Amino acid sequence: MRKESAYDWRTIGALNLVSAMSQVGQFGIAFVVLPVWLAQQGLDASQLGMFAASLWLGQLPGLGLAPWLCHRLGHRWVIVFGLLCTVAALLWIALAGWPFWLVGGTLAGFGLGLRWIGLEPWLYSIAPAHARGRLVGFHETLIALAPVVAPVLAGYFGLQGPAVFWIGAVFTLGSLLPLAFARVATDAVTPMPSHSLHVNPIVLLREQVFKLGVVIALVGGMTEAAVSGLFAVFTQDRGISIGQTADLLAVFGLGGLLMQYGVGWLADHRGVGMAALVCAIGTALVSVALALPLSYSLMMVAVFFLGGFITAFLTLALIASTTTKSGSMANNVSVISMLYTVSAVVGPLIAGATMKATHGDALMWFTAAAALAMACAVAMVGASRRESI
Image (cartoon, rainbow, N blue to C red; front, side):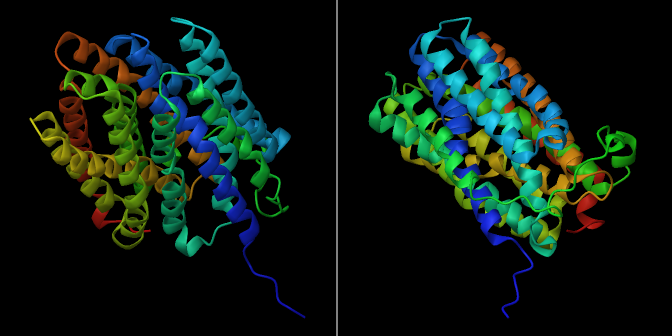
């Protein structure tokens, strides 16, 4: 009689595929390509900053409600509802105008928040514990395909027409197919008792790894949202065409795609603190380089590394949340994700207002300053010498 695997690899594979496909529509189109599309409609840096903030602001109720909804309805239905919210948001944005686009942005963020918490705790709870950092890195590598695939497809089919919305809807709805093959075992995702729905942050903050997750989330969300939401304004001020902007965004996503597994490996072997310090310093150096005059080819190299380092912030924050021993995994992922999202709401607003008052290069100086602040905070925590995953 054949002995069954201790791990449900069918469900692990299905959930990874759901993330990879849905992320193209929910993040690659909504968060990366739509700001470029909106810039073509005449929105300025301040308005684009407001739209980017609406995307991340909409995630907050999704992230907050998802653990409770997973307990009531199950992870599968929470994911389905999140996907449908994003499709409805894309339809709204295609038909509406400013300032009603902000409503669509909020709904798109809400859908992403539901899918995020509905899927990732389910996935990580059935993963091999001894390689969780690498699984998070692999999973983040797959979803990092989104900011590569979405700009490439949008550039091919046209950034100014309705193709952007069709691409988002097809990938978002298409992820329902692999979701149907995922199995929820009774011991895979533990239902949350009512007393676990509220996390005591004081208890969580006693753990060194959770402190690191908080630091990374608060600064990482700010930088990722600012860069992804306002990059089109930065390139416009440099005289870069819309086609070249799409190419740069694809290179940005490629950096995130290729560097995430390495970040997970570094976190597994040297600790989350060391990995965060490397990524923060790397982000600061590359951002300063991009703020200076560069040729287009050198800019592509710099954007590649910027995408890898910035995307790693979310990877590291999630690793910290999944390795925290206090509380349930779903709640810990939700708390860190909400902190990341709150920070992401603020980032585009500050950067957008600064860029409107000065120049597009202010985006990179803002990113460099935030990354240096993270490096200092991580060094103060000193967790790279006191904890390892």
